[in-house]
Length: 101
Image 1 (cartoon, rainbow, N blue to C red):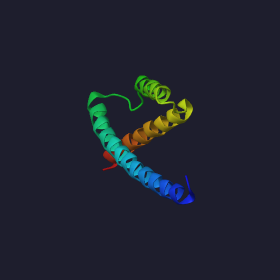
Image 2 (tube, rainbow, N blue to C red):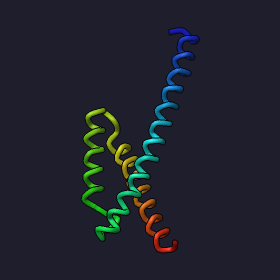
Image 3 (cartoon, rainbow, N blue to C red):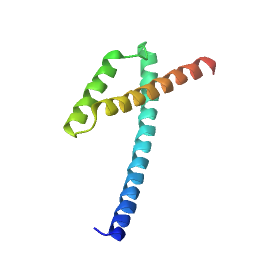
Image 4 (cartoon, helix red, strand yellow):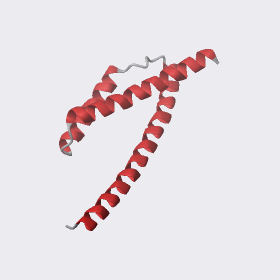
């Protein structure tokens, strides 16, 4: 491959990554919106925000996916933990707004 083709490949690959990143961010936004529905249900059902079993299930699933796709398990597990923490914070914020407003 010559430099011209390598440059074109680099540019095209980065454009694909940018599109994937945008999709990921949109999916994260949807995930957060769903977490608002979940907290409303948890409030009515008088269920704690923290659900250790659910979090463990999410982590197990992430590790399975990592293994199946040859992705670093620890890194994917960290990503899922960040997403879980983000949802919990959103749920805590929802409760705070309900109490104050």
